[in-house]
Length: 583
Image (cartoon, rainbow, N blue to C red):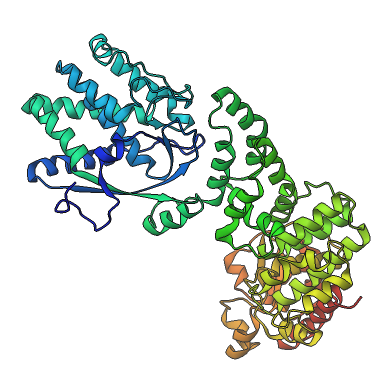
């Protein structure tokens, strides 16, 4: 491509002919997402190609980000595609379709020349790679690409023209029908239509435009961790590459040269049991795991550096199962911290202490410490009594901060190295000393908590449902796991009768206080909910599954500023005792 034809100043901008004609293979990681270009994307590419022909212009296809994998010196260069899978695959399919269409026109030598130059590693090249195709698809697409090649070679005259070359197909995995095969067929229909209109010269014009006037910028990264950084900058609207993607690709790159049966065995026996555990509804916690896991092994690692550090950690592990085993060590502890479960099978007092932290909304910054503590308790490396005391202290610290409205900012610095600060043997005294060492992290006093309970709006706070459940438990009621509805005794939108008891100023300052909130098992009728206390009180007593609501109705004949003040004082005293910071 001449300088006049370039659309960028990058010396790495190159036409597709130069990109694909070298002694190279583009490899899509085995477990990468499947090819998925939809018909409208193909139509746009076709329109762009026709515009290039009609205007004698050029078209820029974008940036291709690849990582050069180490290979045997006798083998072709292998570039692992970090970004560009969809475009490279589509271009490859169109060249396949061009070859097949040339055959349909009897142009076998021309078809053979294109095939050998752009689609396959050349005649006589003995490579240890699994296929002599220049594109190695992911698991789901391999059977479809093999079907494309079989379709081309079903023409005996073409097979003769290209002899002695023989296709070495990719080990066949996935279905032989799908988006890749369908798009190849779509390309064939487009080319057939163009040939029918203007003959074989139109076909030559199309492939000349595709190979000679369509360009890309190929970015070769030194380290695969740098690929997502570039990708996310160039493709802000596309699905980002995650640390989890890189981890999976790195693990299976260790066995890329093995046959699919061996890879599938590792996948089914080791990877899938590990990966599926992270499922949560329609989503997954998989990508959330790697940062806390990385912090356990390097307390100073940044989120963007996690993969690079893990890759270095695993560099001497040849077997993917060894890497997966290493990754699995803290998996159950992480899932328990995030879900509030007891996968670690702790005894009830310990399980309850961990679950309380989850119910209180403990931030993700606590996870590295909690994961190590859970594992230490499971393996009996940490004394059970010490573990419970530590968990109760951390709970008190976090709950008091939440009540006072302190954001979790700064807690990352506290918890990322708390385990190391306690020398791997945490006790209540060690944890408190370590936390208090962080001068910028506030540990609220009893006075701070009292002030917050009596004056700070608590409706909508993450910790409020937990406070109401714990108050209900303190009163001796049943112990439901969730609060279905948080009721404003003094409504947010009161009827006129309320404003004879509370002034507008008192209403505004009181409606969201903890003392004005009750847990209910279901939402009250909207009309009753905004009505007077005399209509709500019997419902609290008769229809609520929470003892806290029933007790409230018995203890408060009327609800006015004086009653609210008394309850605020009662709750602030209880909160300070329940989450005491005294040993």
